[in-house]
Image (spheres, helix red, strand yellow):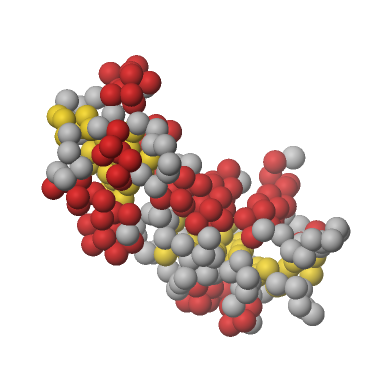
Length: 259
């Protein structure tokens, strides 16, 4: 196993740049942290360039390492992992993964989650993970939404980005295409034409738009949806967290499929 001992190593300096979105996009690769995410990436046959392990990490996951070790493994110091990590205490394993070449053509069928300017990385990651759990066809991130290769998004997704397609595309065009393919589009908003989600039956196919944490779905997109929907608030809370709301709606539309 090759070994790197210094944080001043040229390779380490290049990897540090991956903390910033513009450098991730330029290098077409990203970092994942922790054994679970590395394991998920390996299972999914993601294009992994390097797996960085400290001696502690090798000892902790010795059985897995001995089974999978190849020329991609690098032995590094805890100091190097700390310099690359976004968490206070790195777990002892990280990986450098190439971004996949994603096709921009969609089938325009099935069940889709659309995120309109959802900026919080934890919310974006949680919604993608929930979409995976609910058997959604895919997720589309519109302009302004958090980068899926942000380390906080990656941690919140817990590997779900390897299980379903995720696109980053302009939602106005996408919504129009869904409608042309007779896929109903729902937008979350409390307005005069909105109905409670409880009045709607399960859906074999649909596109669900979830909006910005503070502003909701954009007014322009709301004029394009087939139906605006809302989740009734029973208690005194002003609103629901967008990720919680998305989970409620995705499972509601799935209801008949899991009975």
